[in-house]
Amino acid sequence: MSAVPGSGAGFVPTDEDVAGVLEWFAQWDALAVAKDVEAMAGMALFPVNAVTDGSAESWDRARFLTDMAAQLGDGDGDVQMESVRTPIFLNAGLVFVVTDATITVGEYSQVVRYGDLLVKVDGKWLFQTMVQGGW
Image 1 (tube, rainbow, N blue to C red):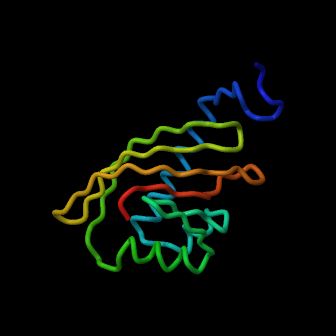
Image 2: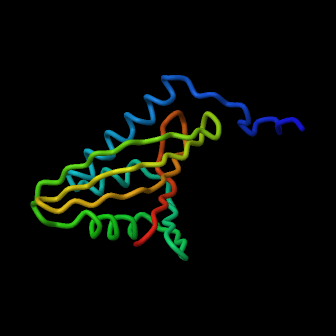
């Protein structure tokens, strides 16, 4: 059986491809810690998909801003994020990234695993789908 032309089957990302995705997430994480949901929305391709156990929703920009602000909270607590990311490229323009992270706010830490789909549009990665159990 052969690959469908243009499917990305057999695509092998370069070190530069991987570094670009990891740099994108470094910026995303910095914005999350700063609780700058407006800037985070600027890195998204709307509508975005939010998927969790037994539920999948499509969020427009307004819903994204509301729900992300609620997730990030409005406290002034010191937020630290330690993440290990594994990008899985489907082709040069689609990457699913699995993240294992520890998020610490003050004395409280939580370990999470989630996945994000990024889509490359006009040479720029944009957030499109988030998948996480338990919320």
